[in-house]
Image (cartoon, rainbow, N blue to C red; front, side, top):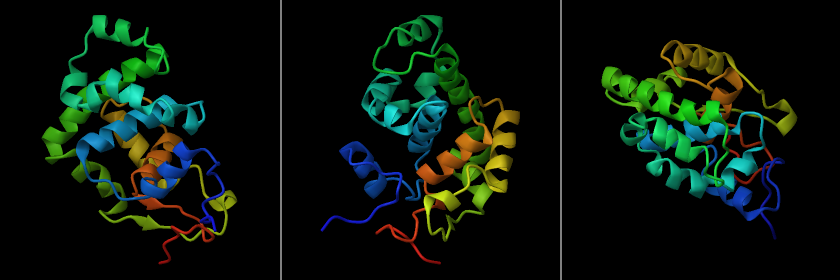
Length: 187
C-alpha cells in the first residue's frame, strides 16, 4: 500500500523523493541553506517541480552552491550562466544568487554561521504545525515576514515573505506535513 503524503505531492518521483527525504527536515548546514535560499528565489513565479527537475543543473552551474565561489562571479560568469539552458535564465534571478552569496558571507562573518542567524527566526527550534489540509497552510507568517525584512535589509534579493516561508518549510524551520501525511509530526 502506498504511503499517504501531503496533497501537493504528485506521482512524479522527484516530488515524492523531495517530500519524503527532505521537505520539513531541519537543515543546519550553511551550504545547503544557501542552496535552498537560491533555489527558492529561482522558483519565484514558477512551480517548484520546475526547479527541482533542474536542481542538478543548478548545482553544476553554481559550483555546488559554494557561497565563497559564487560571491566572486563576475560579468563573464553571469553571461555564461544566462546561456545555460539547464537553469532558469532570468537575469535578475541569476544576479541575485551572486548578490545573495556576498550577503550570505557577511552574515556568516557577523553570526559565525548562516545557520545561527537564520534559525533565530524560530528561536532555534522547528515550528511544528497542526494542519488538517494544505488549504490551512499559510503562504506567509509573522516569522517569514520578519525574516524577509531582515534579509532585505542585509542586501538579499528574491526573499519576499512567501519565498521565505517556502524556504522555512524546505529547511525544516517549520514542519507543515498535514495530518494525513505519513510524515506528520504531532506536537
